[in-house]
Each structure stands twice: as C-alpha cells, then as structure tokens.
Length: 121
Image 1 (cartoon, rainbow, N blue to C red):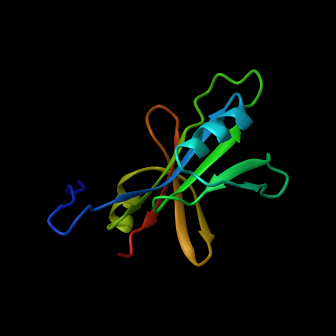
Image 2: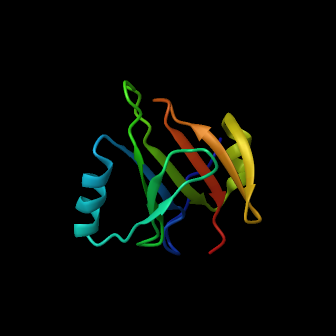
C-alpha cells in the first residue's frame, strides 16, 4: 500500500505536463495566448504538428483533435517523490528515457495516459 505524501515541506508532487486535444487548434492557441501562454510549433517524428508552452513550471501542449475521435485524449504528467514505490504498485504501459530522465506511462481508470517521473526537488 502506498502511503500518502506529507505536505510539510511543500507539495509532494507537481503537474509537469498537460496535453489538450483541440477541435479548433489555432483558435485554442490564440485563446491560451490571451491567458499568457507563449507557444512554439513542434512536431515529433511523423506525429501531428502541435503547440507547446513551458510556462508556470510545466509543459502545456495543444494537439489537434483527431477527426471522428470521441476518446478523451487529455494527458497529464506528474513528478512524484517516490516513483519506484508507485510503479511497483500500479500497472504501467511503457517506460522511456528522455534526456536522462526515466518516464513511466500509466493509464488512469478512465483511459487517460499519465506520465510519471521522479521528483528531484
């Protein structure tokens, strides 16, 4: 059983990543820019062109909504202080190393992908 984290020294975890699928990608980009986000256009391999912002200590990405897709593709990323204990107690879909950081992908009960990394601060 995983113990809940103590909050005496500040937050035990933090949100690192939020990915939103947008039916009107350009309109969504303009909306979030009005809120203060600055985006850069990105594309990873042959994946879709999307926008990424690194404001407020996290990555916030806007992806196009795939046509005829009804699935919620919201994606979250968390930095946790006890990654090894957590991945020992949940089912993970995959494990990646990105820029010398181990990233586990899990899935929440509603099917959303959740990225987990070790919190270092």
